[in-house]
Image (cartoon, rainbow, N blue to C red; front, side, top):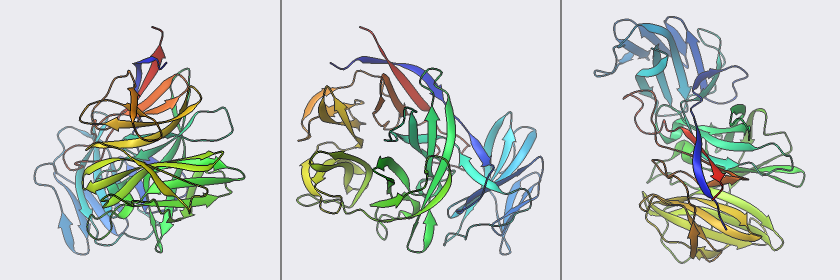
Length: 378
């Protein structure tokens, strides 16, 4: 019998600059005033904020002028994009951006103290499966410009106070470049960590369809910053049309592995899939689910049985499915905006919403608030 959940907290940890080593092209500098330089780009903060790169200027006609006294300025590199921000009335607002055709190298110097880019919001939260008692989560740290500007991060959630604490940033190396691939799952498997992630870091529908990669490490991936070598994780799509797969969730069972994921018939019409096999390189399709915008496929043990949870945008519901992906119930819980994943952790349901941050220049992809729900007695 599943409980009813009620919203207990909404959290929005925004950090443009984070101290520590920079090991990926996701970096930032901040100051009280400009100019700022990062990744070969200079940002000036006069009446209109402007980016200067290779003899050209980039500015926004609609959003380039601050609308309140400027308290601080920032320049961020997130994958292929450089963005200039002003802080006004305590809120960071993007005022100019430029996108490189090729992702810049990892920066080693800047006009001010170089730090890592943090996040405008968090989404795609999953429980980190490990042996300890601490509740750890992976999340997509939202950047200021869609899929390639995000990256995977690790957080600790206090079960009592519902406070979030940042622990780690994770990046993946593939094809000789480092990306912020996200929509990930981190789990402990014996003496190693496994990180499965979706290749949103260089997504392009026709040339680079999204897929899933897997990285392994003996280092403690729950603290610090790590760049991991990734290899493709072949998730089967036999018997149905698929142009891309994402949102992996892995579970080791007595018989081998279960892997839940999402497959798209076209961008963006997608549904859950469940695969099984004796090893992660010998998976076959077990079941194919329904839905047009249903994602966040999550494996869970409920009442001693394996179930599959998902998030259905059209129904605004969290269906509970058996291992044949037949619906056997739904979670009785609030359904925020966007497509919040159904992440269960004891009496908590941890999701997110579509609340944007950073203004018009950012566009889609800065969401969202972390929405924590707690089970209540009947």
